[in-house]
Length: 410
Ligand code: HSE
Image 1 (tube, protein in one colour):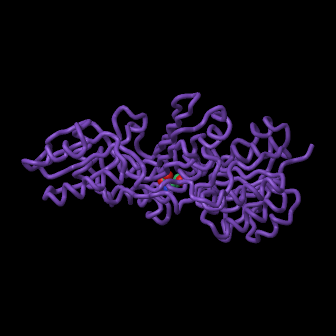
Image 2 (cartoon, rainbow, N blue to C red; image 1 turned 90 degrees about the vertical axis):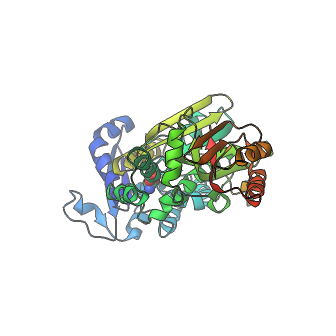
Image 3 (cartoon, rainbow, N blue to C red; image 1 turned 120 degrees about the horizontal axis):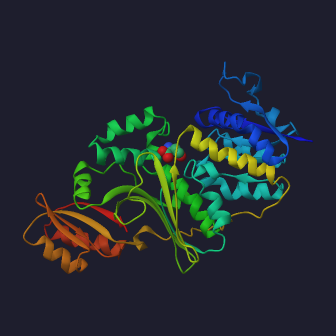
């Protein structure tokens, strides 16, 4: 009986989690595979002592690349370099690669999937979106009988944690962020979380699966949560809504799509409104299934490792089975301009004698309108962003003071 030999590249938070989870579940994995499986190498430039796996550590990538016994590699280094080079070389050497590296999948996914197909191996990335939540495999296989029409997700645990603390404990943004970092949720550079780049990479991956075309981060409008103030938190709370960082995809009938990341005022009827703390949630709409929701821990060492290990096992289980590429690089931008997207909008304006009449004459009857602490809160029906911006300009030119606006997710 041959044994599967695995290499783990990177021994940071996720990498050490992968080794731990694999070690704990090894017996049951072997029983499911009907073969033995072992981690042969752990690649890291930093020396690690007393891990219980000390004899497996190496610091030269070529050892993995040149060892024909290693057929499956977990890339949990993160970032594009050297992860791209290492991944490409592993695939070209006939080794399947699994990863939690959303940046690499979002920027180089089409290319790496094509190299994997050419070499009859796999490139899998369940852990790249939603941490421990199964979402990639459901989109790829379980929902294959659907045209995916819409995806709306809370896919960044750190910002969800921060917003939850701001809502429930009136914590300041800075205090909540440093707590998230202490708990190991945040990326080392908080801008990736707070400014929405991490969520952008994740919606790119899901949009690429749904559309079959590579959706690149530079085409996706991305706005983070750093401009959300306690005034908006208070108002949202008073009207029974919440504010979440939403990653959004919508298929359009012309073959293009809307894809964006933005803080949104979330209707209490939405399944995403109750997803709190570091948890993630994704609501997928398909033309056959209707609406399906996925919920669970979106970040952290062991949940992410759980998804990486599931991909390792999938590679070993399906060794030699070739799959066509999941999405193509069509060399054209399939995402429509943000000005052509349509949402309902929330407006928080300074109260004046004229503001409500002006809002109503520009936007029609509101979905919701309230007076709160010398402010008028107004929620519009769905409107194209370009038209919304023009109307806001008209309001400001007529002397009304607009404090803040947000897209609304129903
Ligand atoms: N920083 C990411 C998050 C980690 O907060 O969701 C998981 O991708």
